[in-house]
Length: 359
Image 1: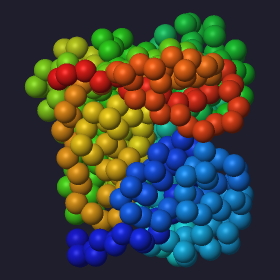
Image 2: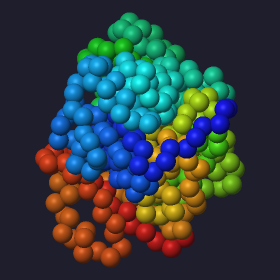
Image 3: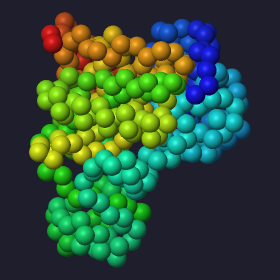
Image 4: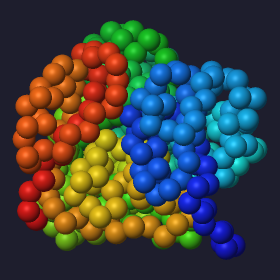
């Protein structure tokens, strides 16, 4: 790779998307001395209140996206549902890191699974379900219990339906809105793990230690890092992260959600081409947390130190969990991170807390 001059402090870095991940990226970038511009259709999005300049326009206003990117020395994104057309419009005016490949391959679950399996990495069995008939055929191959997921969009348990038997096919198809889908076989995992890693412009990959995750209702409730894991599992997770990072030609932080299948080793569940909820524990437990690490990579800086100085359990504050903020700020063991969302709604991520312990 040809030499890339690192961005100087004071340069503008643009973020496509202004949710809580964009907010925490903006804060990390500001701490490194960058001016942060945020583009989001919502004028009062969480990141808009912590950045140097907020741009509010629809994603399909490609002229606005281009004008935004033209003011930036580099552009990144905070979530994988940024339309590809918007990313390409930004890329016509500034370097976009990570690039379109990371977005394209992870926006569609079928393309993503193909990519993962093509790298020789195991996943749960799966099949394409483009209609009720192909869903029934997919059930013959994959079996039950299984889970039907829309190919595109859907997060935190949305756009998904569980099937206990073949008789559930029609109801599941209706439940996901009769959209193009993927049927995934059930993985009888011991536990859910994830590896969050950063990949620099020169191809260096630095992973954070594995986190162990607990989901309820399709939403991540708790992550603990570093997870207790054998050396073999840690080595396999790092090898998976390195292969995926190189295969995507990714620049920045990405996350790989994993199933610990016991004697079968690790299976990949999903890739997130961005900073990730299961990496929030690194903010307070590592010298360079995931948000700083991402902004360093985007700026072409050397990556920071990901080795934790503490063990940490991150708990999401979902909906009215956040009402306990007065108790949380009184607890000396708690680091409270609130996302500045004005309206509390059931199922909405309002913030998280990190509880640190000695390693």
